[in-house]
Length: 316
View (tube, rainbow, N blue to C red):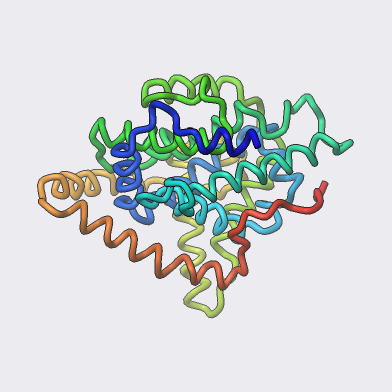
C-alpha cells in the first residue's frame, strides 16, 4: 500500500537526537503544556471559521468537549513520549491512525450536500500544516509568554519532532517547515489566510471553555471548576487578545492579568533550573508521573475512545 510505503520510509532529514530532545522539552513543562495547547492553540484555531467546520460537522468539540480533549491528549502524549515515534510504538501508531481518521472524515464531508466548497477542501494540506504549527511554534510561543525559557536547540527540537509527526500524518514534505524560522514564516502566512470567524467559532469556543465545568461532583469540585474556567479564559484573553476572547464567547475577566504577572517568577525559576544540575531530569520525572497517574483516571471517568475511531455519521 502507498500509505505504508510512505510511513515506513524514514526521511533523510530525520534526527533521533532532536526527536528525543523535543520529547524531553514537552515532558518538562508539565501541565503548562496542556494549558497552552488547549487555551491558545485550539482556541486560536477556532477563530478560522472555515477550518473549524469539520469539527462542527462531526460534532466532536461542541457535543463531547471533554472526551475529545482526552482523546487529543492521548495523541499528544503518545507522540511526545521518548521513543514513541519508533516503528510499532504508540506515537507512530497514533499519528497514522489520526491520518486515517482524517481521510475517512474528509471523504464523508466531500459526499455531504451541506459541505460548502467556499470553505475550501475539507481537512486540506494547508490546514493540516497549521495543526502542526499549533503543536510546535504556537506551543512554544505560549509557553514563552508564561515565562518559560528554551535554548535555540530545544526550540528547533520541538519543531523537528512535529515535522516528523506531520510527515507521518500525511502533510506533504514540501510544505512542512524545516526549522523555527520556517515555522514562523508559515505561521504568518497561515494567519493572513485563515478567513473570518463565524457563529461556529463561538460555539466551539464556548464548548471548549465549558469543559472545565463539566463532570464536577460536590461543592468543592464545582468551585475548583469555576476557578479553572476563569483562569483558562483569562489566559486565552491574555495570549490571543480581547477581540478574540469576545469572538469565542469567553467571559471578560481580570484573570488575564494573572498570567503576565506570574511570568517574571516563572522566568526566575527557569533560570534556577538551567543553573541546577539534574533539574531537567527531575522535572521530566514529575511530568511522566503526572501523565501516568492522571490520564487513565480521565479516560475512565469520561469513557473516552482513545483508538481514534472515525465517526460513523455527520451531525450536520
